[in-house]
Image: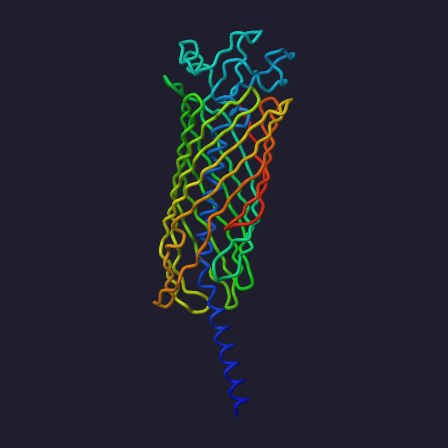
Length: 376
């Protein structure tokens, strides 16, 4: 009788354990909203950097892209930059006179530059396209890590600069698509969606301040042992991004900065394929990300950069999950660091940048991608 009782008890405990494990699919919405927080981080920080300008433009306020027929002492790095001369904000090619002696920056706000702004400058500064792929293991307390793959496509345009007495402002619009997958041994979530946003920025001397806002939606298909759960998340957010260019010499710039953002995520309520009624509270996220970038001209139109960010994300654990009228505990996620390198080449009016990044902490993995920009 004792043997039978022990066997029965073991089977009962095993059944209860499996039953509890089978309920892990109720966290599907938490997984998708947590991933949206990372998607937002990538969209807004990347767009801020793209709109601020190329690595070339970051060297000494905004660099001037000019074409020279021959190398001179003032043009030590080929056709890419003319160091030692007044620098332009933006990424235009102003030819000046034949010898490029009278070319001037537009930070002075003089009448000649105002005339040029009024009659000669294009309404659109540049068009750009970027693609990023992210492969991460996302960590949570008390539950298996999620193997996450995300592809982020972005495209946008930047408007022409507007001269002010002490600085220059610019605007931009962007949009894109996001697709990806999150999976472990109990859930497999496919995600597809899109987003759009606006940008405005202001530069005075070496200080850059930008404001970005966006909105998007993500359709999710979560496969579990009971079947497929389908639901949609919507989000809207805004961020401020501030950087300062410290020019160490003619070829080397340090760029410390701070990014602060807010995102609202609409969480889905649905009836799971397990017949559980799952209610999820909308989530409010706040992010503070100090960052640092070092930019170096390595000659002949080539630029290299090193970057570091640390994302402090607050609020992603505040969404209540209610299953069949009973509140369940949220999962805890963690902050993460992101660091990597980039290389950039400018050829005439085209700029191509490649990057490779690593993340550690709450998200562990690699990312890579490219950005292509055509400057009018």
